Image (cartoon, rainbow, N blue to C red; front, side, top):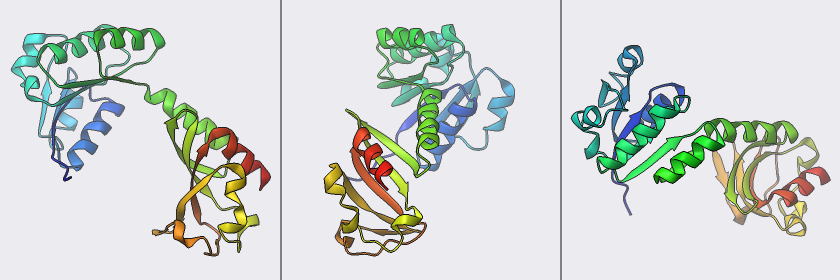
Length: 219
């Protein structure tokens, strides 16, 4: 099914909000950026379809900005609890289909959840978890949590595995599944069980966190 561009409103053009806004625009979507800081709005005026100085706490101001025409609203005002709550509420009142919001604490999360925000995100917590995972296990370069303790990890091939095949890893013994091997910019699928692993290869592995840890410790 082809992807159809959507209309997004990003409330708050700090580091997180501006990154989301510019990436969504790069993907071909229509993006409105809103902030009270004239400098931040000016910095992104050329990158976004619209960048406006608007007080997101004002329902009338948001309505005049055309926010109600957007499909999705993202509130990135994590450190201003009042503004975050009112902006999220205004997006819903103006008929925005989906509202995501950034939270900076458990209390903030609970308030946004009670307001009916579709998804509450904690980018700092997520990044902290990712950094800790990579520091704890240097072989892990990146990972995606799938929930229920399952992860997909991007694991660097250590020197000890250089010259071995995927079959030699005996991943089944650890209840793990190899999704493929990245060699530079080339992807070798699971049908490459007999391929010889090389230095700097990256393994994409699916499994539970405890099994992944047991496997990496066994190498």
